Length: 64
Image (cartoon, rainbow, N blue to C red; front, side, top):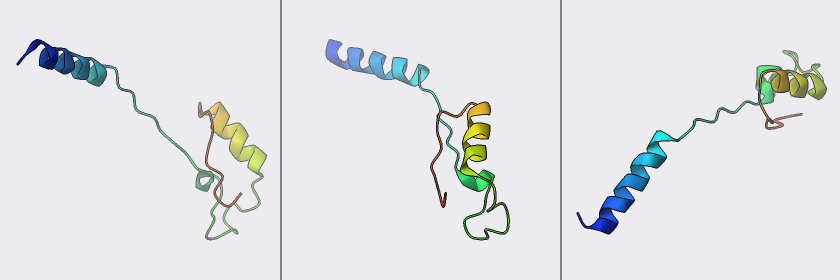
């Protein structure tokens, strides 16, 4: 392996060691887009507030 190849390999290894996992969430946790009678009356403000309390910076909106 030449010097450039070694630099690339070191960069890839460093990146692997610093990767993070991002977890997403959507409103189906609180409501049900297919069966609105199961949580359909839950306001979007509740979805957003509780997602924020759980540490999420945002959620997809789904049927809301």
